[in-house]
Image 1 (tube, rainbow, N blue to C red):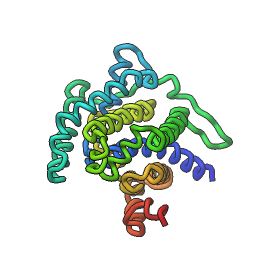
Image 2: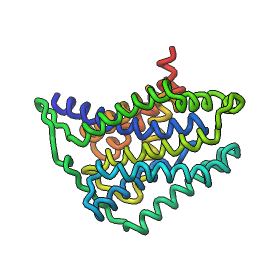
Image 3: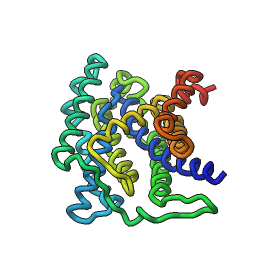
Length: 288
C-alpha cells in the first residue's frame, strides 16, 4: 500500500509539470494553429541556459528564471516573426518540417556548446525531502506542482479577465472576425507564441533540480507534451492539466510496478486506451 501511495503522489507532482509543459503548446496551437515539434528542444534549451548560469555565476535554477524566462520569451517572439509566421497558412506539413528542422538546429547547437555528456544543475532544494507517514516527497516536485497549478490558474484568469486574454480568445475563435473588430491578430499571435516559449523556460527550471540533462532529451519532452495536449483536447486548459496528471501517474506506476520496456510504455498504452473510448480527448467527456 505504501508503494501505491508513493507512486500516486509522485505521479501527481510530476504530472502537474507535464500539464504546464502542455499549456504552452495548447496556447500556441489555439491562436496560430501551429503544432511546434521543437517544443521539447526549447525545454532543453531552457535547462541548459540554467546550467550555463550556474556554471558562470553559481546561480540556482529557481533564481535563474529572472534571466531565462525573459530571454526565452524574446527568442520565442523572434522565432515566430522570422520563421513561423511566413509559413502560417501554408500546408501543414511545411510547418511540421520547419519545426522539426528547428528541433535539429537547437539540439545540435546545444551539443556543440555543452558537449554530449549528461550534466546536472544543483539546487538548494535538490536533496530536501518531506515525509508524510511512509510517503517520501521531494521538495522540487512539490515546488513544481504548486507553481504549475498557480500558473495554470493565472493563465485562466488572464484569458477570462484581461483585454489581452479576450484578444487571444477572439483570435482563437475566429481570426478574421477578430481583425474586423480592430484586434491586431499578428501581434496577438507573436505575443502568444512568445508567452508559450517563456512558460517552457519556467517549466525547465522546475524540472531541472536533481534531473540529469543531455542535448538529445528534447524529443522525449515533445512526445510527452503531445500526449498530454491530445489527451486533454488541444485547447482545453482544464483537460490539459488533467491529461498531465494522468500521464504523470501512469509514468510513476510504470516505473515502480513494472520492469523494463513495459514500464516505460505504460503511459502510451493508457493514452491509446483512453483515445479508443474518447477519440476527442478528455474535452469530450467534460462537455457531456
